[in-house]
Image (cartoon, rainbow over all chains, first blue to last red; front, side, top):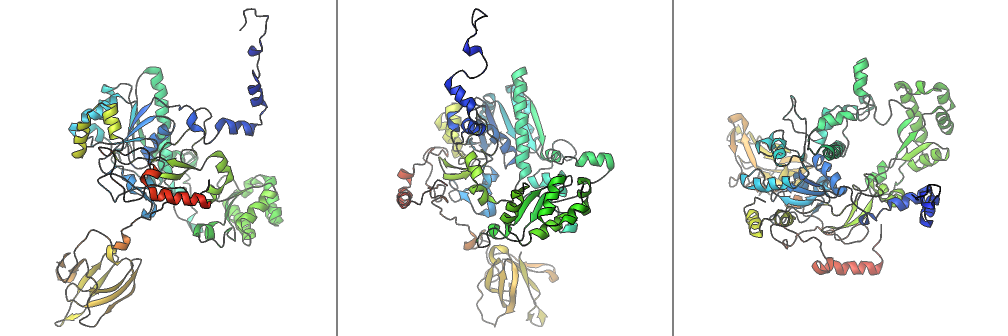
Length: 471
Length: 162
């Protein structure tokens, strides 16, 4: 501000202060976003969680993913694995086919499977048999130097090993401790969990898939969506706990039940039961609240000559949405079924179960001699919302995703050229974007870095532990 | 077990009544001859994806079996059994599926856009101590043959951005 308040400097006025700022303000929004997010230029920007150190004593996908989110945002994560074995998830791969080597010096013919992908990127990999009394000191020293820990053992296991929240908060009162597992305390306390169990036990699988009268069955998602989803929910808990700690200086314990988390995505299901006693049923690719708003089967594949079965047989589905009265009228005009519109003029009439069966059957009847892309083109040209149901290859070849960096190639320091999507599909931050340094590391690859360089144990000690398979 | 062969061959006026178990490690997709663990009768079978596609067809006496069952028992006689590894009756348990199921990985040297990959086997020992691995794999220095092939691909224009 100027000393004399009657004077007005250009810097104090609202609006651009320089030629560059003026240019930026005049930039079209699209260009502004491209410049602000600049996919592929993340490495030159700061990391929001830099300075946070997290211990990950986790396995499989659910709890590791809670920490992967931190690691991609810049936290220093130390993944602690079983000596010479590693995370059991390392030994899984789609149809047991895709493995990357090495895993460990002592296991030359064992690799890490692609099932491990995206759950533990950017982390430092150490090994430790931490239930041994001899390794307790190293474990506690890590606790003292870290901000928090995520673990996934049966409830009470870490307590028995004297490393639960009750013990570690004595060492480090600022420590944030996460237990993530199947059921949490309660009558089923000791039940373990997997994604499929979460989907089943939470009631999610019971409302997924088509109704049995239409040939459907209870369905789980092909991928482990509840593992990924629950892990992300834990990350929110961690960030909230860190904010609380910034205010109070105190740590927290987070107890996270996977089956409980999966009930959240059921929307109106539970309240509706509470009000009317209605038990929700499956409605598959259609929608219980909106019609038309579903996925339809078209008659012809877009790639009938492809050798890939997913292209050849499955490129036949399209998502159509036309639930507003005007859109539905247009849709009935396109499929030349004006009677359909007269029968269900109001959305209230369309959304009923019998009406939906009739409407979708007539839509599919219209689409039976058309390919998926024809259906999409016809409906889009009429201004209706319609998109093909794409497969992996189409996602990879999609220009929209390429421009935004959603799928991209990266050079992993150990494993070479890798096509990745995990990090970059989790949202873009203009100032502190997520980034991927490496997909994973072999078991114990950073033992020397952590035990010797960070904790200060002599190399001879590290070697001794290694020879005894304690690390 | 993918299936069994319940041998009913008449032995000394009595049916043999031995159940020969066909384990999936060996017999999943398999065609050949197998002996009964008790009476030694040889059967020809053809299994596809764990299902008995053809057989079991009894072979003439004196036919040499390709293999033996892993385990067999006689459930009607108080479960007399023939455990693994009885010479001439059952075969020993090798803890491994047949060689074609051992999963020797494909050596994929280049990604679908033609750039070099890593992570194949066999791997050299780690360069450091205590399982430490060098942070960056220098293709040119450590895999010179792949590097040379990569240079050829570049020259031919087979290396793309996408």
